[in-house]
Length: 152
Image 1 (cartoon, rainbow, N blue to C red):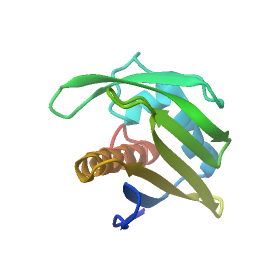
Image 2: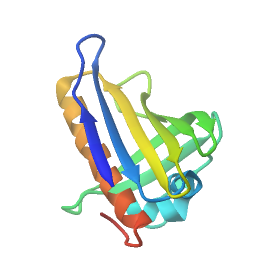
Image 3: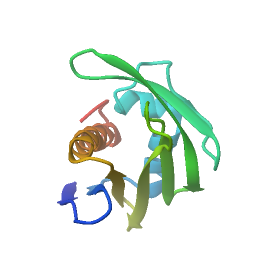
Image 4: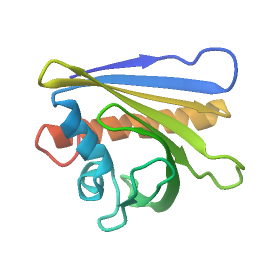
């Protein structure tokens, strides 16, 4: 497993990109990201709170639990779905007219490795830093789950 972080570039918004090589085929990574019971086991979601309709225009929701025990609900929709390859996920943000979007790309490298790339552009540096920290936690949890544990 390896992780690369790309610093924010100047221009529109505050983007980040996280890339990690996972020890699993793309189909297994896809199932972990798009199956409610699997997602709940690695993504810090409250058990039973995850609902997913993984298709363009479909919705999702989950209640997340931070390491300190704080719970907060999240909702959104799927903007683009390319099975085993890419998801563009819209995330509802209170006070924001349009959803924040995150792109998840999967690139299989051989029969057992998949490169996952998460991309998001945020409105502020503070929002970007929080989203990047949350996305890093997600990748850590996914890595641990795929290795046979519950979380990274």
